[in-house]
Length: 518
Image (tube, rainbow, N blue to C red; front, side):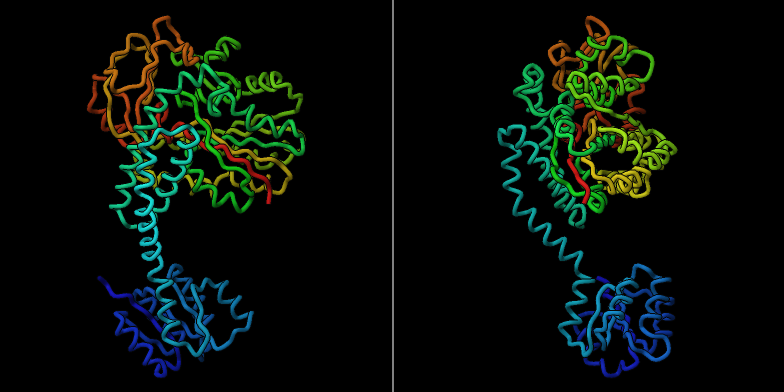
């Protein structure tokens, strides 16, 4: 293993020889410089893992040398060593991005501790995370194979996501593989749980979890009834819980999380069904019955989510909420930028402001269609990172910054999640069969019933059908449907892409978050 290389710059370096000898005995490689100028030149000519920099050197001061080093090598850790504890020096040093500082005279224990914090911190954290996961493994395995109720499934999924995020920081690939296997097993059992319970939930809303069709009534309407302050409902399309946890770090700078929960997206977990259901407050079959031509089936021409404002207006009337509201759907960058400018006015003039932000769903589709996006988001960790990077530089973050200065209730949610698909499942259908890879609606569908979750009578789960003999099938976790014709091409094209429409924890257990300003 390569030695850790240290550059120590001090005009009295001879006095530090005992310290340097100790470091070399412990396996560190130490190079020395007598001035700030020498240190800058050595950093330009070679690579170092850590720099110890004396603050009070003749010629260039340590702070001046630090500024030049950071200009050329911004990521290199620098430990400032100073005789003074004066506040302005520490402010200047910290503002210049030092990693640590020591007060002269330094002793060997201080030096070793500082190095361990800098060089070994990621390894030590990784070891701690790995050890903690090992301790939790058996308890998680027991829960995965237990007969869980919905709230217990939510808690288990949250724990699995927690460990997924923690272990992704670690270089222990073996632990990540073990967790992946555990998560796959949990998803298979969750799929069985949904198969056994979903029809009963639809039949008896009083004995079901919060689902898409009653999400607004149960989680948004109470804010409106209290009428304490304006409410903003932000729906980020296709937002998984693990993606929310990445965004949460940034959003925490602006808002305080009051309640973080998961609800159950309806089937199929597709925008056309789930998001219309949220704003209509009805299951899809009931939307079709109430609104007629405003509901479009999969094989109908036209946009499938163009009437959400009308659905929402009707829902507010049925809930007897006589309020002013606005509905904004953002699908393009320019529209997002325009909303930054008018966000305050919308909130000032409405009791409820609904913002539907459709980027992550577009990112998911772009990842399927564009090679460059596939490379940028090749797995879950990269997909989360790309989502977080987008958010940091998006108009949505600017919108939230505007809202953070207002006294509002903020509800952040989504319509469904997505899952990375790996296993092709063959299906046969006519030209009117829906095109989604994770569910199919059509007549005379051909498939192996063991491979799918089927609803031969869509009315039992309140799904509309375009033909008297139409039925629905949903794919199981990590599966995706392919047709026999040109099968090899579609298998390779869609494998490892992020899709939605079927049954999995990632698609169905999705976030609903209450926040207030700090």
